[in-house]
Image (cartoon, rainbow, N blue to C red; front, top):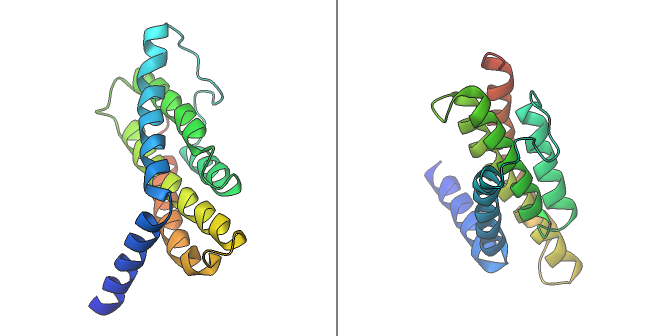
Length: 160
C-alpha cells in the first residue's frame, strides 16, 4: 500500500515540476486572490459572471473545463472570476467563518490544479514530449477530490 502511495506521490511531483504546471498554478492562485481583493477596492459589488446562489459544484466544473480545454493558459482568468465570486460569498455570508467561502476556495484550487495538470499533459502529448495517459488517472483522482469537496458545500451545507 505504501509503495503504491509513494509511486503516486512521485508521479504527482514529476508532473508538477516537469512541465509548467506549478508556474501556471501559482499565477492562478495570485489571480484568485486578486479577484477576491481587487473588486472590493473598485467599489463594484456585483459578481462578474456568477449570480448569488450559483452552486459551488458548477463553479468547480467550469474551472476544470476551462483549465483543461485551454491547456491551463486561461485558468488564471477563470480563477480571477472564482475569486470574485468568493468575495461575493464572503460579503453575503458574513465572513470567512462560514463554510461556503472556505469550501469554494479549497475546491477551486484543487480543481484548478487538476485542470492545469491535465491540460499541460495534453499539450505535451500533442507536441510529442509526453504521454497524456500518464497523468490522466492522477488528474482524475485530484478532480474527484475537488468535486467531492464542492459537492459537500452544495449538498450537505444549508443554503445561503
